[in-house]
View 1 (cartoon, one colour):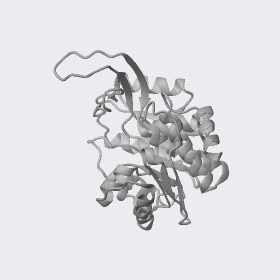
View 2 (tube, rainbow, N blue to C red):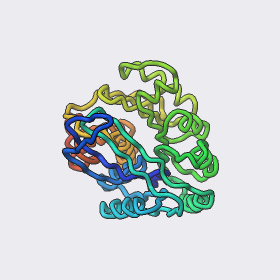
View 3 (cartoon, rainbow, N blue to C red):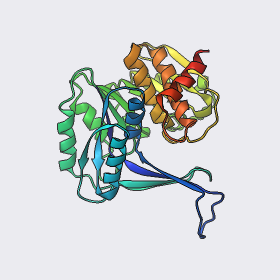
View 4 (cartoon, helix red, strand yellow):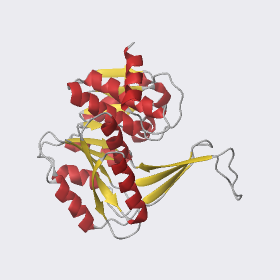
Length: 302
């Protein structure tokens, strides 16, 4: 079973506008509202691909109720923990302007709520996959991913981590099954500038040397790189298509990789499924459907 944890879920309010001027009233030309958060995005795409999973995380207030309602409407299996202080965040994304985003803070998550999450994770068994993805609210320590992996390191759970800089680097000693830094995160970790897939390979290999099992690097228009746990390097250019919405593309890549790995236990297949799902979501108004992923996958195979 695959489980995802989203510490700070959101309602993503995605707006289109012809122009944007500071200090003036700006009117939208289109708007959409989706449940968001990296773990939730992974769960949505996994479900679209027919892979059984459960979404865990924290919800609060009327926005939390709406997130839960929308995810269940999509057919997700959820087991969210409700907290009493604050409300789940709303993230505003200016789609057609310049990519500007305004992300909310999220609710106050108490130690009691974290203990409830630990109780849920106690039920995981050997071979289960746990996806830890996204930002952490300020009320929680930056070590929370590391704390979870330390607590459950002897259970045989396969950890997947998608996080920035210290959140990611600090978990490597517990040998996560998969990490997925993007190009910018890789540059930030190693203080370098990367332009090509080939340039990313040695830094992905360094992360593997530091403890990661598989290192999947998303590089936007440059495609992606995988250094698998056997040390083999996989590289693919970005599939051809029109960029519609980049939100959730990286999360979709994780879901596609896990779906492909679940199907065949083959890293080349998992990598191709990952880049297919990530690209299919980027070419779609929302997160990719199974049909959209299969279409991109077929184009890669040609």
